[in-house]
Image (cartoon, rainbow, N blue to C red; front, top):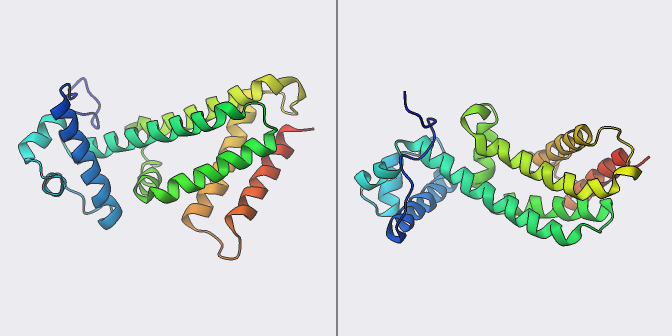
Length: 205
C-alpha cells in the first residue's frame, strides 16, 4: 500500500517550469468543472485543455481525484488567507460588525468560484478523503477564536470552543443555503442581518 493517501499528488514540482505545468493543469481542471461539472472531468480532458501531455500529467497526479484534491487545497489556502488578512485589522470591531464583514466576504468569494462551492458540497459525504475541506472549517474557527478570546469574560457561552463550533456550524448552514438554494424574496443583506443577530444573540447575555 502506498504511503500517500489516495488523493495526494504523485510528486511535488520543484522547478519553475514544473510548477507552471501543475498550475496549468489545476487551472484547466477548474475551468472544466465550472463549464461542464465534475462528472465529465477526466485526466485526458484536463491534459488536453491545459495543453499538457498526458504523460506529464501523470508525473504529478496519479488520477483525477488527486488533481481535484490539489485544486480544493489551493482554493482553501486562498480563502483562509484572504479571510485572515481581512479580519486581522478588524480584531477591535464589535462582534456584529465583524460578523457582517466575514458573511459578506464569504458569499462574494464562493459566488465567484462556483466550482469550489460545487466541490465542497460533493466532498461533505467523504471528509476522510478530503482533509483540506475539514481544514477550512478548523482554520475559520481558529480565526473566530482569536477574535473572541479577548472578549472571553463578556461572552454568554461558558465553553468558548464549543460555542465557536456551534456558532460556526449554524452560520455556515444559513449562508450555504443562501448560496445553493436561496429564497428569491430574501436579499443577501437580509440573510446576513439574521446571521449577525444569531451570532450576537448567542454570544452576548
